[in-house]
Length: 107
Image (tube, rainbow, N blue to C red; front, side):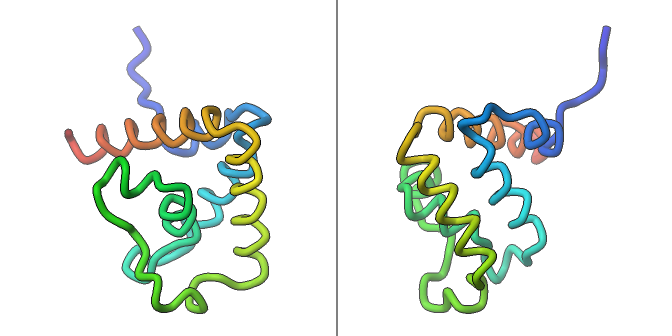
């Protein structure tokens, strides 16, 4: 029996081609302080995921400049295009990440 647990890096390292840009945005966003917010939070707010799943927006939309530089805008734009082209593939990835977060929080 294999007792190894899947973590977020396992998921991000093994994505479908239709999920690569979203995975890159998530990975890049791991470098941010959650209190400030992340490009990933902005992405979740823009596609309606945070409101639908968590019942609230995740990013304080008053200060985008603290989070969005030219690299972040590039990652965000690519992830948004990916979502527009194949929303279900992106939603599948987000759901898998949410499952890992729930396990890590003990839920």
